[in-house]
Length: 76
Image (tube, rainbow, N blue to C red; front, side, top):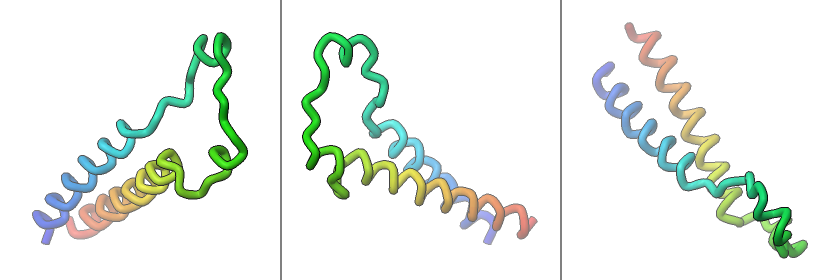
């Protein structure tokens, strides 16, 4: 049972790393000062933007990672 949970934890950790790395950067730095972005109201408030989807995936995988970690420690 413990080996199975460790295997799931490795898979979830890889998914968590991938979801974090795929999120767009929020710091535009000087680029935002020189040429402000042209975000529309729809783009800012859309529920299905890729940014929000990746944020939800990150939250879900991090919670799953924490639950698996607790389960592994209880089984020990």
